[in-house]
Length: 279
Image (cartoon, rainbow, N blue to C red):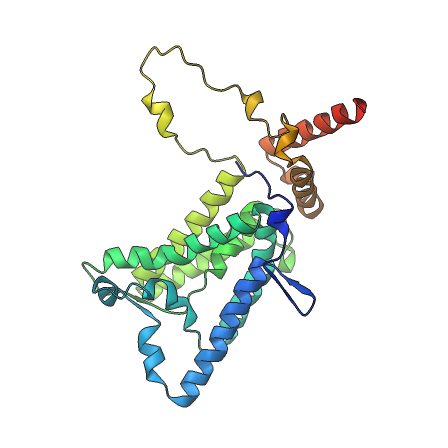
């Protein structure tokens, strides 16, 4: 379950002329610079950069493993690229607020590396290639999973906008018989949805230890109360968790909270009340 990042996890990656550059903004900045570099390379007719950055499954299998990480740095200028950057900066920042800087960067690395890793496996049988995908749509799906009731354009809620866009993109891939594109789309979207649900405590992953106990074992599972993050003041996270929940309520209303989040909010309220009464 997500522990809602500590204050350190909510700090910017760097400062630029006195302005904070958070992790989502930093990613948007890196890809923007890659677009500028790509534009200069195209203007100069530099085909060397073209051949070394994109992902080609056959070349990766030959040992050129850097292509798994560099494929997203080849970005010719386009309106769609601008939209992707805006999605990373806006929706990515909201996801970063919920996860914290470190976990957000880890999450982004997963959705960024998932397509080339899948394509590397498939390249054993079929040729695969990839270039200029920056994972912006998966970040929007993560945002819509976090705040399904957030109002978007045309008065539609975020969850419906995400569902419509996933459907349209899927139909586009099917119409073009782009099976690899369809696989990449659904893999990243499914991972983003599952990851956020897991962080919300709504999707539990099986633990290896629970299968290791022999039948009839007298060992009891840890009581839920002992896993309550508010049971131990030493963790230093109650206020950060309250702030994250209040942000979600402010954006999407009390109805957007999951049952576990409501329980967490109630636990936080009781914890603070006990702490205040003991002073």
